[in-house]
Image: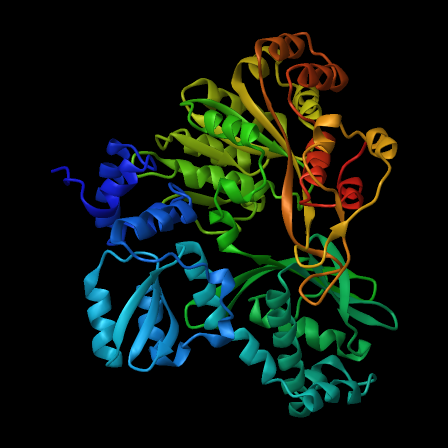
Length: 564
């Protein structure tokens, strides 16, 4: 039976945030999953958090409060038990005598107020907060990683330098005087990487030195240089906790680590070893599940690019290709699309090498070429499993490409990636593989080429003084320069050399009739890129310059990640 709309559901419809049909469907889904209606709407990216908060404040006649204006150190954190804060996703803002000012994103449940009143013995007053900011602040308030880092004693870490470089590896591993400091050192590196927002950790042995580097916002930097004598010990420790064979040092190995950093948060690492001249280089990739649920609005698409992507996702069949070099954010773009499509009424299967992030409700397969389960074999199996949507981690050969295209031609939505530099080169790469031009022209709906650029730090960026003539030579248009101010990095204690976080730069192109004709004539990338320009699709370079004109990133950064 369809629920009658009342309260927040009705308010969202009245405010134009949801249609009546959407609200009824979402209300049913939220009830099935036993989630508050507002929380479900925001977490499924159906409503912008700020608009949801304004609607809730209006509906219940409560003040709207901006958490950004609040110093976390001043919160009345000790007034409420942590389990209640995490259970109801509330923020204790102020305590004034016998009154507790409580921040909530969904004020629709009076039982929450009653429970807090009973637990604290205080009178409760409510303010409305944005749900996403509540989530972020709770994680920050109860993030135990900083506390764990503080427990490492500098003297213990200094003991690492006292190890005799002539000792045998086996003896070192069994030496209790050095085992504990190595364990703590490795833990500290993992926790520090998480705290700094690194994407990868590199443990690298050389003849006379050993270094640890983090990739932060796409750039590697050295963070530590332990004694080279500890290289075998550090490698052994990392291999033990990632489930590898510590006795095998001749061939590469793969493993995973799950590190619990707080009561309600754990981080996964994908680990790979590589035998080098002076020992095993070990690289850890931090797998951040939250990145897959960021929502399309957080990725950096321009409005028209976002609309093209959503339109392609809404089609019942065809192919969407995401291209770019390793580390350009292709997986996040694909996962974002899959999350949008992931509803109870569809069957989604993915073949990945390897599966990096678990997605609830999606059938994910790790390809294993050594036992004959490659992308092509996985695809053949998917087609016997009644699929609606198929995601192939990468199209590497003609067999995989052919099966994927046949799937897209027979009523399935297929999403995949290629390692090419632009949308035009994606088509020519597939043609060179041997894919018939007619199949490409009639099957591919959308191509997204992308890069990741570092975001300028909002706390310290400063206006850049470039002559207009120089900017026009760089490729800026008059319309871009009229958008706003161009900034450059400075650097402060809240960022990394003037940058904080990353943003996507995209070339999003639809396969129009004119583009299809060029493909069927097996035109080259230059011809395709020229037609894309005529159709009004921005190249990667133009999209990057547009981000510079908006003050999001710097000209130096766009020059680093794109070519003119």
